[in-house]
Amino acid sequence: MIDYLSIYLAKLIGLSFIFIGAALFFKPHDFQNTIKGIAKSNAIMTLVTIIPLVVGIALITSHNVWVANWSVIITIIGWLIFINGIARLFFHKKIMKYCVKAANNKKYFIAWGIILFIIGLYLAGKGFFIF
Image (tube, rainbow, N blue to C red; front, side):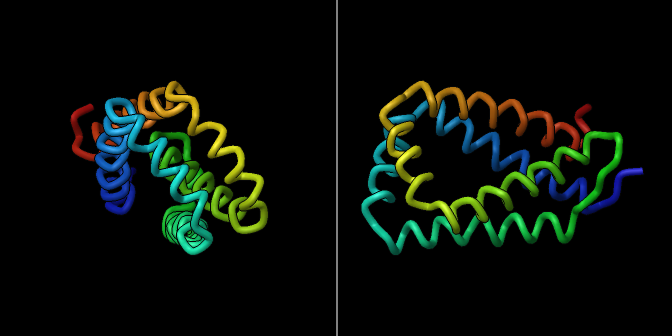
């Protein structure tokens, strides 16, 4: 049985991923400029480090569900966001160098846009009981 939190998070994450994925796909240049701008500011870099850490902790403490159905995707996303936040906290200079390097490749953003869009469609479909 799927609980209400799984359904809510599927809707929230699903719709977010759909819109972010579409934006990455259709406007990769904007995201390239954003990454380059973030890399220049220590204050913004610190904020960009803290946000995934807090979001990841919120997800894994509220939805740490390891079951053999679609809702495990939410748990995995939560853990990936949390690990990303920890990595940024301790290795932010190395990660930022990688991000700036990736920002020079438009295909990187397009690929991530497609991936997020597909995951978003699946989660939104589950959350809104489309399939």
